Amino acid sequence: MSGHDHGEDGAENGAGDFGPMAKLPVPEDVQDAIRTLIRWTGDDPTREGLLDTPARVARAWKEYCQGYGEDPAYHLSRRFEEVGGYNELVLLKDIPFQSHCEHHMAPIIGKAAIAYMPRDSVVGISKLARVLNAYARRLQIQERLTAEVAQCIQDHLNPQGVAVVIEASHACMTARGVRTPGVSMVTSRLMGCFLEDNRSRKEVLSLMGY
Ligand SMILES: [Zn+2]
Image (cartoon, rainbow, N blue to C red):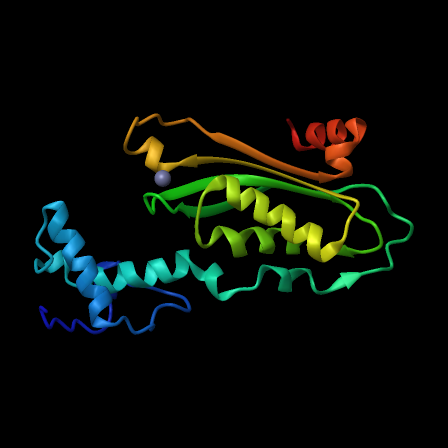
């Protein structure tokens, strides 16, 4: 199409890319797609400020969607069975995450609380956040994200129960459509003892702050 080849990002204007994606080559057809979108919005993709934008946007999207290249269960493969008789719940809360909704490809920004009741093993606590991110860095809906994180922990850690609560705001609601900033959506998935036992459910939800 336009045959542009703008090579490296213009770091001189402060918009350069950094990190592992900085040098990722972006195929011309991908850049063309973004030029088409820019034109569609009403701007001119050949004006100076937008020349390197298609490659930047493409790399940014690779980064937002890094989860496709990850097996979330991998993060639960290193388990510790020496838990010193600890069989009470493990909770990681206020885990920040970003995702993108599959309907508008708009940001979903929120926090998650993830808990499990160990049966015979535990994992390093940061692994729960890694599982979350492996699913969040994909095109998502919040309901599925919540369910997938819970199911992954249930399947690979075999705990007595899992509880996942996610609270997030959706840019497709806050920045467009009904434009309601400040609104957040809460989703939860409770499994095992947290689903079946009232006392366990109350305990986990209150520790989570709900
Ligand atoms: Zn949306």
